[in-house]
Structure formats: C-alpha cells, structure tokens
Length: 93
Image 1: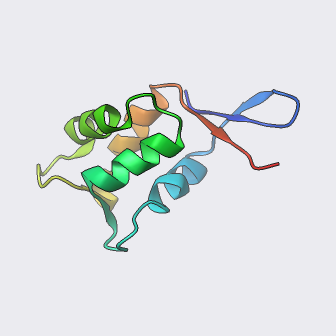
Image 2: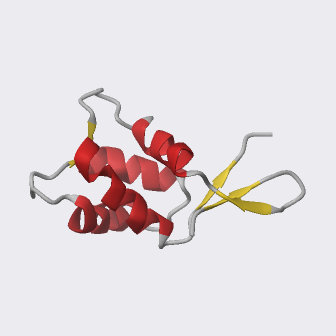
C-alpha cells in the first residue's frame, strides 16, 4: 500500500487522487499520457532504487493497448500496480 509519511514519522494511506496527481505532474509534455521516460522520473521521485525497471514493469501492468504509454483510461491499472509496491509519498515540511 502506498502510504504518506507525516511529521513525527506516522504514516497514513495516500488518497488515490493524490497519487494520481503525483504521476500527472510528471506528464511534462502535457499530452495526458505517461511515457517510459516520464514514468521513470515519477518512480525516481517516489524513491525507487531502480526507477527505469519500475517504469518498464508499470507499462507491462498498465499499458492495455501496448502503445508504450499510460493514458487516462489506463491510469487506474498503474495506480493499482504502484499501490502494491509500498512506496511512500512524503509531505513537504
């Protein structure tokens, strides 16, 4: 489960919309889909030790039409995959 770490070290579940927004901010060309490069940067932000590997795996899980991108319709599958990995999104102090 993806959790949010708050001041004092406590963790809370991350709302799906917050996780979705985290990924959407890496859509740097604003085409409403995430490329392998954008996914890699997102996983790097989330603290993955192997962000390129995670980006590749996320495409395998989420890219239903096999076009090499995660679009709006495929975003829920991406979020399911990420939620199962246990990443933490940190709130800025």
